[in-house]
Image 1 (cartoon, one colour):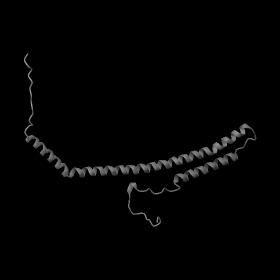
Image 2 (tube, rainbow, N blue to C red; image 1 turned 120 degrees about the vertical axis):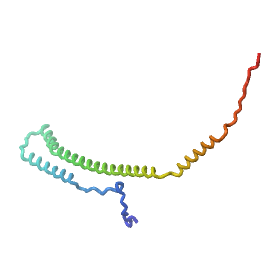
Image 3 (cartoon, rainbow, N blue to C red; image 1 turned 180 degrees about the vertical axis):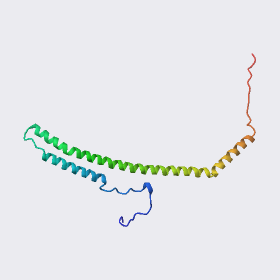
Image 4 (cartoon, one colour; image 1 turned 45 degrees about the vertical axis):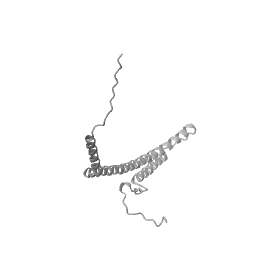
Length: 155
C-alpha cells in the first residue's frame, strides 16, 4: 500500500518539507583536510624531534602533552565545523520564518482591506434596529408613577 503512494505535485511553499541536506558539505571537507594536515604535521614533528630516554613521572606527563597537542586542535576544528553547519541551518530557518511572517502579514492586510470594502448586512440591520428601538422609546409616553405623601400628625 505504501509503495503505491506517490507524492502529489502540491507546492506547500515555506511549509513544505525541506530538501535533505547534502551528507558531506564543503565545511566537513575542509575540516577533514585540516585534520589530516594537522595529523601529518604533528606526526612529522614528533618523529623528527629527538625524544628523551628518561622514565618516570616526567615521561607520562610528556605522553599526555603529546596526545593533547595532537587531538585538541582536531577537536577544535570539528567544533568549529559543527558551529558553521548550525549557523547555516539557523539562517535557513530564519529565512523560512521571515517568509512565513511576510505571508501572514500580506494575508492580514488583504483581509483588512477586503473587509473594509464590503458592507455587512448584519451591521446595517443592527444599526436600523437600534434606531427603530430608540424612536419607539421616544414616542412612548412616560410610565405612570405612584406618589404618596405622609404628613405628620399634629400633636
